[in-house]
Length: 416
Image 1 (tube, helix red, strand yellow):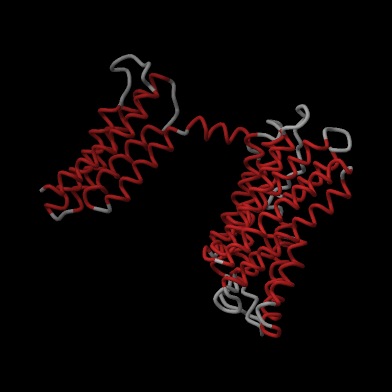
Image 2 (cartoon, rainbow, N blue to C red):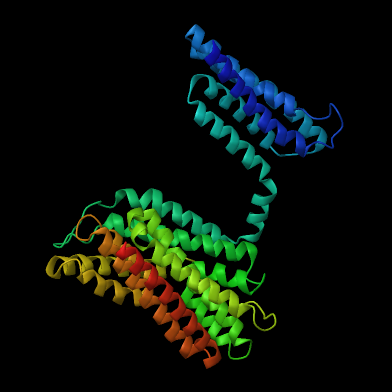
């Protein structure tokens, strides 16, 4: 009995939570002018829970089905009268009521945690109307198409790929290649969406950080070009922040794929990132405000670059496995360093997938750090080509500072 009372209480709470959002949104309406508010939604959840309890007691699911159909008919009829009076064509309130009823039933006869999570999610979605509508207004068809491509890549293509190696060195796994391609593109896509939603004109720091989520190298080149005419020291500070974001992005990938490796590189990586961050703040503090930089932020789901990434990853993964088979795991350091000059994500991902087979956690960590170092040196070289001395020289100092802190942290971790 106590269990049933608790479950009915959860059903009521789900309805009250959704009703709170619905009632707040219509709080200025006259009393009695709205079909459903906090009380009605609360009763709807309790009604769903009670119907489920009766169906369980009578061992007849038809009781629950009949109750739901009757509730849906009555609720929809009253909502239709309200919509006709207000000249409103929104059906959100109807589906919210039906959802509350069903979640109330789930709370009594199903998984209470799933019901609680569903009720919270329903209320959150209803409360996010302005945010979601604003997002739709700001995003273009290209971004929406990219989200669809992500869904197709994940739900359609990924399951049909063979999840086994198909080369003599056990390095080329089509499923893994595609999975890591989707994962990397998804991380970049969030940065791309951030640029589109918040804009690259909100300030130098915001534009740099959001741009670096997509490509820190592209940001560094854009800053170097702008530094020829505008505050090179401050722009060098922004490039330092982009380098910090690049390292944190690698740490995120490592944490998702092989969290044990993060324990091997975390201290050194975070120390280097802190060095870049501190240098960036100090350099940005000098001089006057400068205009924000809007680096060319390509769509991460453009098919050309996406397929190129997959091809590059497949080649590097195969080369890593072959090299590890012939010269041992230490050969991964060489391939990671070389591929890190091209794409640090490819270098790190191709190394992580060998953990537990051809590479130990320590070796994979060393390879990931080697890729980070080579990638940072490449950015510095490109900065020297794209920008003036007053831009790349402070960036070089920041790079040396970050490298020194990272090396010290790594050696300290190795020693203890």
